[in-house]
Length: 117
Image (cartoon, rainbow, N blue to C red; front, side, top):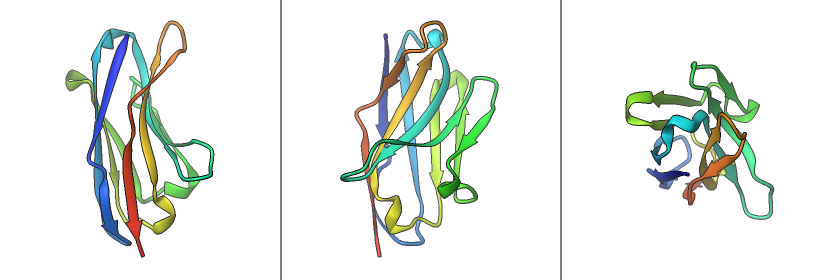
């Protein structure tokens, strides 16, 4: 099993920045890709950004140029630097990690990000 703990959410004004962190523990050797998803009220969960163990990056079009995902492998931690935040970025942000052998996705508990206009 893998446990994920997110931190760094909060309330910020439009145009501001936040940095989310997600620390993995447990059987971390099983992890391949790590990423961030978000779910706004009344909407389905959507991909924000993913980074593989080899460093390949994927971003949602809506966050390209504003958000940056990074990973510290020795610390088993993934970060999401969010700049130029918009009210439509308001959501619960979830950290995920994919098991390299089973393709099972592990999830964190989520952290709220609220962007005021």
